[in-house]
Every structure is written in structure tokens, then in C-alpha cells.
Length: 92
Image (cartoon, rainbow, N blue to C red; front, side, top):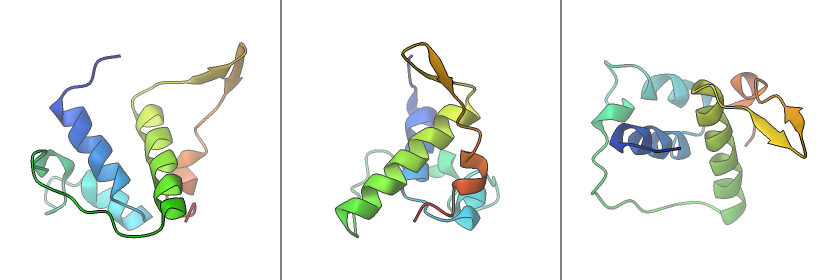
């Protein structure tokens, strides 16, 4: 799996977007928070608890993988991550 700058922009935007509304904004080309507008070399400071960041990160990665057609397997068992479409704003 190889990631390009747009992938990193999208992942960063997902990590820093914690609600369903914000999720929609990062994919809206007319939004000021559209993910392709992220400048990857800018500094970013995290605010919040480590637990909330861990939850947001986990949710963001699951959403990214699902959106890009990846599937999860463990010990040859398939785990659907389609549920993340409904859970994006609810995992807080």
C-alpha cells in the first residue's frame, strides 16, 4: 500500500474531524476545510485527551480504509467495517 500527499491530507482531515458534519465538510470542494486544501508542512497542535484522540484516530482509519475499498481480516476471518458510515459522529 502506497500513500500519496492527497492520501495524507485526507487522513489528517479525518483525524481532525470528529463529527458527521465535519466529515461531510472535508469532502465538500466548496468548504474551507476540504481535505485537498490542507498544507501538510504546517504545524498542528493536538487538543484533548489521549483517549479521545485514540478513538478519533481509530474511527478515522476505519473510515479511510472503508471509503477506499479495503477490507479487514484476522486469522482468515473477514470483519466488515461498513458500520463506520453510521458511527462516524457517534464514536466520541
